Length: 80
Length: 102
Image (cartoon, rainbow over all chains, first blue to last red; front, side):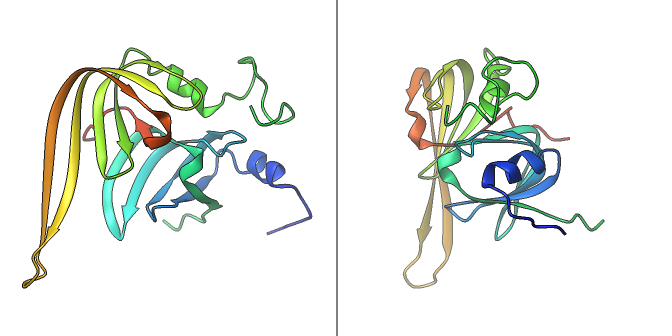
């Protein structure tokens, strides 16, 4: 995977539409397809699954995460 | 917002997450908050801080009691109903349509 020198905002533009893992400061994990995000790291994800240790809740449709709670956003390779 | 170079302010091409919340106005939503709280209510208003006005709200507070001897985890949830509620945005973690199966 190419990781040229790029700013964080370039990365954020690139990953829209991809499956991502979003980890919150609280440790909760959200996996889904990144619908959109903004400069505050507010995030909208589709087909979200919430993981705390094991799987907790399934959220279908859009889920919005408030940016201040986000620890990181990472792409994930979905292995079916 | 943070800078103009990223996203357009008007709804031309890419929408911000907050624009998508706008689609939920007047709909029932589910809000996950800090301190193990959840809200289910009708979204009347919101702003960029995620301050919200919710109507007809049910708040669920979940607590875990741990037995000192058996180390058993006892999950309790307390619910209350509030006709009209102002939610301060800094407590909000997640906003979604109400949880439905399938």
